[in-house]
Length: 375
Image (cartoon, rainbow, N blue to C red; front, side, top):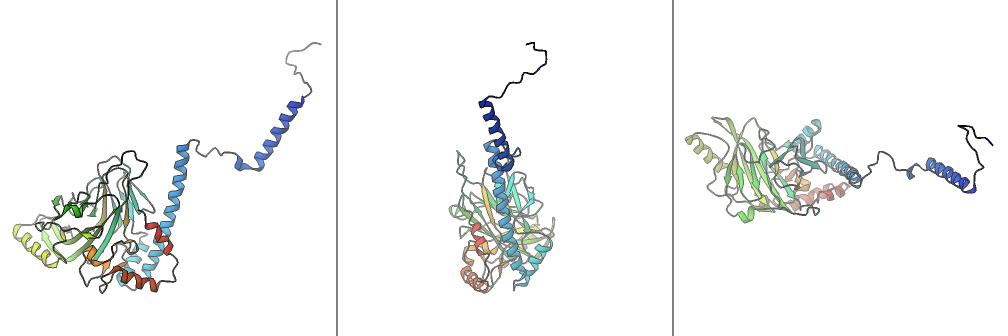
């Protein structure tokens, strides 16, 4: 027999070859009928990338739940008996805003999760700040809290939390420490108050110092009736009271109103006016703010991987009485979202909460509030 070049030799298939061909045909048929047996090309190949994808999906689910809860609370504000609460709810709905941290008013080194209720420092800047999306109400007492969580267990070296909680205007840069800029004030984890670039020493730093698993509260009243002229323009007085875990921070009695450059006589008169209008002079820090500026709840993160949960709604507040937040009697206390925290005739938060529960006992959205127990 002569074999010509390029001629293919065909031999009868052996038994083993026929078994292999049959197995391949069955596997291809199974692949076509069960596509989930195949790993999609778009699925990340490495464990780290797969973990990132799953974490992204988990964060998305959290954001959806928090957004649903915030929308329910906004609807409740529209149906409130308090006219100021209804007006605030309408403004938030028309402006498509919520009482959360603002992504467009946060430093690039701050990551916002849980529907923008939780801020985490991820950048390398010394200070990374973020402000609330909603300014505090004017001519009213507004109260909010921020809770510092424990450091993640994945870190080999656990660093103590270093943050500052306070208020600022949009003029303060986001890479600055709140309180270091004019028109801003902050309570640092060291227990010291920094207001308009000046340090205010507390009477007992051990009470005002805080760290992980702590909640810092801030009560503010921005009074437009206190307007006065200075070299920097027209200023108004903001009265601020801090508390840590329900204990009011008492600043040193020598602290004066901060934030302006008034003349000596005018400054003395204004400080006397502040002393007369302050609800509790021993626990209040006056701050001068330009009249045309708004005040926003502000958080500055210093230590890396630190997570802080904002409590801008009345349902999230942990303080239970006027005494714990340093509020005067006979005035209504509002949350950042405009919800009523304490009516003018209520001194204990339990009393008002129980009355609200009786009125809204048919609502079934209370289960969503359990998510706010972040710590």
